[in-house]
Amino acid sequence: FRGRAACYGVDGFFLSQVVGNSVADVLVRGCLGGSAGGGKGKREDGFSNKNVQMVSEPVVPALGGSGAASAFVLGKLGAKVRLHTNIGADAFGGMLTQWLQEAAVTVVSPPAAATPTHIIHVQGNQRSSSYYRGDKVAWRAAVSGRDFGEGDWWLVAGHGAVGKEDLREITAAAQLLNEKKCLVAFDPGPWFVGRCAPVCLLEHSKNETMPYSMLPSRQ
Image 1 (cartoon, one colour):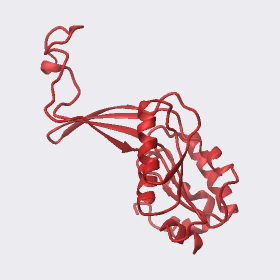
Image 2 (cartoon, helix red, strand yellow):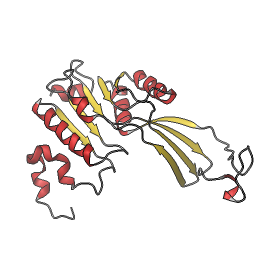
Image 3 (cartoon, rainbow, N blue to C red):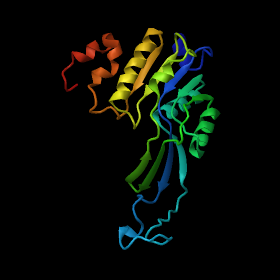
Image 4 (cartoon, helix red, strand yellow):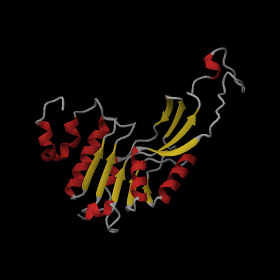
């Protein structure tokens, strides 16, 4: 009960801990990010209608990343939140950190040169994007400290740079959190599709997954 209360900001002594990535989303409306002029003609080094796309709407930065977005919302709802993430020491990182701190989120991030950045081009109902994924999230390091205890909520969120090794680390981290009697929620997002069976995502708690393992495979 104490952990659930902390999640809603009722009990200030217990934390909601989030482990996941942070991304600086940059939304560019009115173009799809290809070469200007429909891609025709020789590319030029200088400014011209062949290599510059003019847009009529402002470019909008936004807070992205499954970890940062979840922590931001929890903070705005009044929860006491600590975010373990991968923000870099650059201008984008400073912007994201400021937004998170304004939502009363405590940011914990190992040193990184650059922040993950996602440039999103939108034109009508079409979209294209360029994504710099940045450093991976240090899953094991996030749960190896002593600044949490029984009853804390942990949200572990996948992101675009995950791989099989990340899944092994997440499983080990979840086992450790279970041993410390923390409450764990895992958000795989789309990132683990095809990399593991769904039932394996909760391997650390087989009793919870037993009812699902007995269902027909198509379910």
